[in-house]
Amino acid sequence: MTGMSKRSSTNRTSVHDEVQYERDDDEPLTVAVAEAVATYRGVDVIDLEPLHGAIDTGALERLFDSRAGDGRTTGTVAFEYDDCLVTITASGTIRVEPAPS
Image (cartoon, rainbow, N blue to C red; front, side):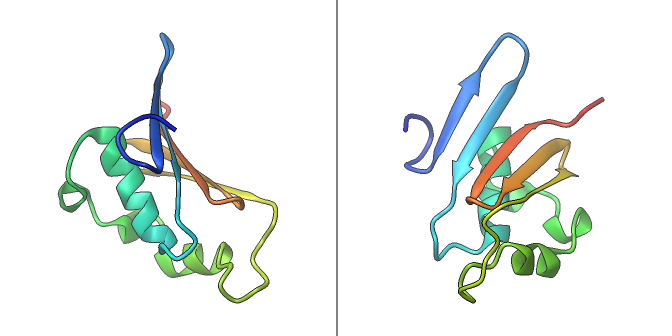
C-alpha cells in the first residue's frame, strides 16, 4: 500500500477524498477508527471529538471482536463522526470519506 502509514492509503478522485485503513489484528477497533479519521482529516488523533459521542464504542468493539474466536465474517457498520462518514467491514477495513451534506 502507499500513503501515510503502512496500514492506510489515501485515494483522491475528482468526486471525493477517501482514506482506507486496514487495522492490525491486535489493535482495538475504536483506536483504529480514531487513527483512520485523524489520517483523513490530517490532524493528530487527540484533536478529534471523543468517539463515544458518535457511537457506542463498547458495542462497536463487541460487534467485530474476533479475539473471542467467533467474530463476524460478514457485515458492515456506517456512522458519522467528526464530519466524516466512517464505514467498517467485518474484514477489518475502515473507510473514511466526507459525511453526506
